[in-house]
Figure 1 (tube, rainbow, N blue to C red):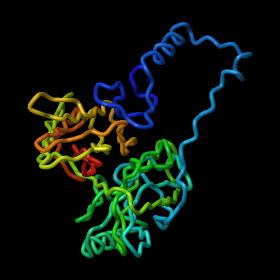
Figure 2 (tube, rainbow, N blue to C red; figure 1 turned 180 degrees about the vertical axis):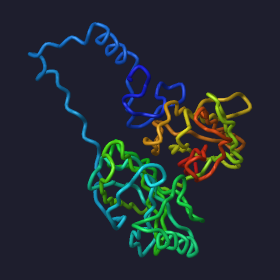
Figure 3 (cartoon, rainbow, N blue to C red; figure 1 turned 135 degrees about the vertical axis):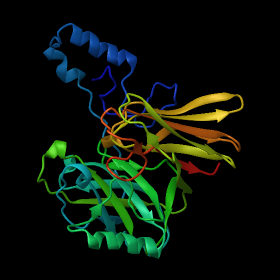
Figure 4 (spheres, rainbow, N blue to C red; figure 1 turned 90 degrees about the horizontal axis):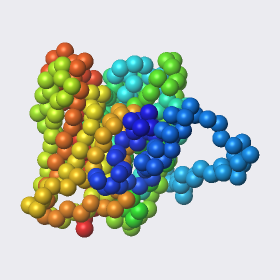
Length: 338
């Protein structure tokens, strides 16, 4: 599992050929070699007398410095298989003035159950009415929302996964959020870890820092996806041209269950450069990946996202969309002005 880069669970390639990432769960080739050699020798036991001296304390993830507001999903929810593993909850952060969101912490009564959370801001009264209407029409708390929040207009505010309860946006930046607006909390539950009939309630602690640089998510999204069925290799792509200089600080990729890899390339007149490679896609590990060093785009630079899928299990053409049989190819770029 380590040699195949399935463990530790980290979707983004961190060798440096496609840039490197903050807080990466990545083993070096030398570390992998040690594990392989140890396994090939029959996994011999080490010297127990050295254990206490050699133990390295794990670095504690940085927590939120404070909690300025709480986003509560409002009820216990019992997920099932298929589309019921995705649930959207309408929640109110209770903001009375514009703020800059700089960090979140996810707290669940059963943390094993929650694999991924995406938070969306609603951009109009009509979007709020749509969200409340979907919630009211469907039995139980929240509503089914495989893929997207199924409400427009809405914009992405956070993409989080289970390996660390806290997500800090790149230092000195945040997302501008409007007052008197409800948000959508989309939760992907993992019933493989908990089994069926496990109730979970989740809330998100929010941290704001007014005065930081305003960032935003910009979607590099493929349209017109039509993947042939029964193939080991099928491809979709999206392109974007920068009309003005900008800086990309991170990427939140999104594909669905048939996705295998995604690569983002920066294309210039003097040649192409790999900007990100998500080469072990795991739908349960979706998150915002933050660059160690920012990616700077000049006016005229292009970005291309290429997504690869395995459609062997599909019986008909796979289209882009928000049904469980649909696919996606989307790289959400966390950007600031230069």
